[in-house]
Image: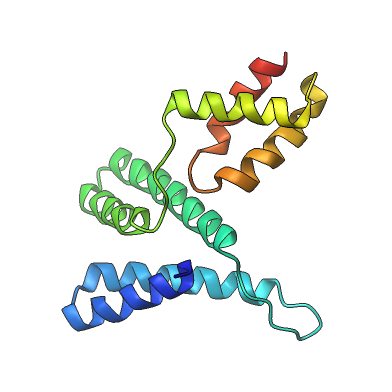
Length: 152
C-alpha cells in the first residue's frame, strides 16, 4: 500500500473514531501533499507524488514541529508545545524507523564507496545517493557534517 493510501485510510479511521487530534494532523499531511502536487503540475498535466516525496514532506513537517515546540517552550506556551509534539507522534507513524548513528555512519561509508568519492567536491554525489536510499530514515542536516568529515 502506498503512503498516500495509508494516510487516507488512517484519515477515514480517525473520522470514525472521532480522534480529533489525529484527524487534524492527517488533514495537514494531506494538504501538504496536495500542495506539492499542485506545485509539480506541468502544462496542466497531473503528476502523482511519489512515496519518496511524501517521506520528504513528512520529514520536513516533523522538523518544523520540533522547531515550533522548542519556540513555544521558550516562550512559556507549554500547551502549544505539547500540541506540536502530539502532531509529531502522528506524523512519525508514517515515517520509516530512523537509522541509529552507527547505521547512518555505515550508510555514509557505503555511499562514499558506491560513488567513488575522493574529496569534499564529491559531497553532492554522496548526499544524492543517501537521499535516494534513506529519505525519511535520517536527518540529512546532521549527516552532512559526517560526510564532510569522512571526505576530508
